Length: 333
Image 1 (cartoon, one colour):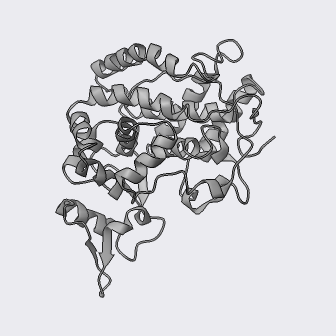
Image 2 (cartoon, rainbow, N blue to C red):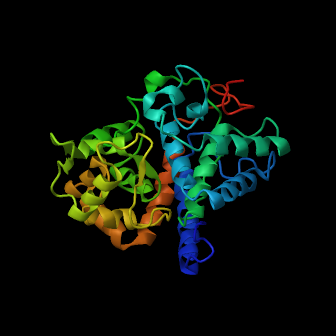
């Protein structure tokens, strides 16, 4: 199964390009305090971005769920030590070893993309940039907007499991809990609503939303939250009974699982949010109106995604003094 990129409406691509170029000046201004820049590798490794995109395209043709994994991997990287590739490092006590990151995927694809770039441009392109570019491309290949992001990130040398839990969002979080973390990263309420749209693709293990159900004495699950759509909860219980294997996953978006679109917001308004943190967006007056806008206006969602994604991928980037260009994404040099 492949993504319906070739059959996507031409107008959507046209709108994406408009979104892209109309946002560049604003985004460049917001990045002026960092060393990131658009076309950072134009002279040192002009094929860097095409090489990463080719690797992602090739992999997603046979693994349609991969874009969701790559996007989630980026979130778990950027929210902890900043966008520095520290989540990619293997070893005891690293971010990757924390239980909260055990369900992450896509590591081998990032390693493969990095190895491909190393063949043509050894020692030039960071793993942090490869991951950011891969996530950007994964969204586009899944039908989302084409977004230009600046590059020039350096790879971090610190990766500690103890830094993971205080910095990532839990699926049971309230709006206030999510906003507290986002605010500490320089992200706004609008960024939270927009970036939550990442749940329009990807999958989740049953344990990620088990707190929305309770088990009766007979071992049957019933929803704790009666506002959830009845047919949706019945389907979730069918896919994830109390006896379900820990390896079982369900689609974040039950309608268009592998397509990056605005269906996620339509699901929220239909009371089909998978996580408590999803449902919270429609119950809070600070966020509901924007959810309603995105649900009816995909172009507006894509426009907002372009701006928020650049902000996400620019969190606490490392400088040459603070980082390195890793030869292997799995190991510090």
